[in-house]
Length: 329
Image (cartoon, rainbow, N blue to C red; front, side, top):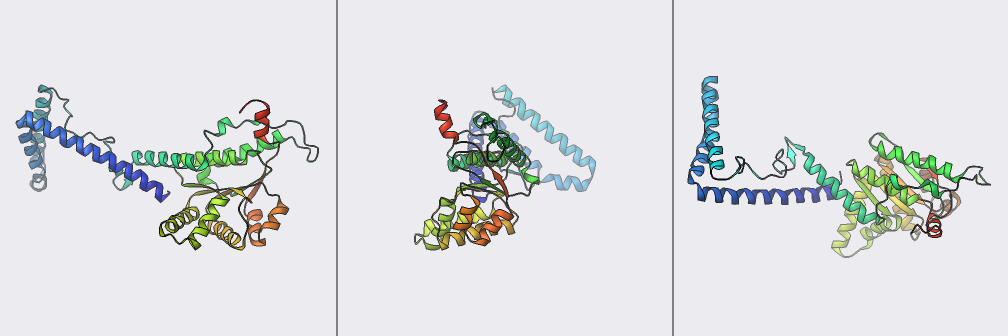
């Protein structure tokens, strides 16, 4: 899990717990002020707790007697609450999640309520990073790809993209058991970023940690880590570099749009190699052809991208232009 997002979820859960504790305190004050006998009953019930160990040592009959006494006190408590217009469970805690009492954990394991908050934090984080909208596998439109065979390849773009879509869909849904890394290659506006976003959102929905960054942003973090003099900015860059290296899935979008220097080449190699060594999965998108990649990057980088990543070639015409022509935007 992403440590930053888990910390956000835990903080949100703690705020929920504080509100529940405050509500519970106010309810007890209200009830005790109106019906002092309820305060005395609660004191008697609490006094039974330290007697459990002694009763256990005295045998099952003593434990049964203590249990009956407890049930009698709780029954009288419930009667008094109802007689005075409150629900019988009014003082039992106003927890958002009774299972964990809003701690987020049950017997040392994460409760489903905290997992839900973590998933929501991931969705918010991805929405901010991707800045696309509501793209999903269900809204991917194969009708935007020509069904006539391409003269050069003899394959229709629609048929090729149907295959690409199926691979991406299966990869996202079965992410936990997959080992592949992917390089999405193709011209501008063919759906590379769209499908990468679809994968990111589905994988995040399953609870895996996902980082989605453009190549400019990702490699810029390495530059800030190395050269930034502001302590706060440097610390944020450190955290992002660590997240990119450790997350379950990294989407590195638009490789080739960054300014290519010796430093960015070194940073790119470090990022890719770190993830390969750590067996972390990565999806890279690029408009660069194989020849352009060889020109821009070192043989070591190209070897890893071409050898360790499965290349998915995107085909067709610029979807953004097609949508404008058809009045879909």
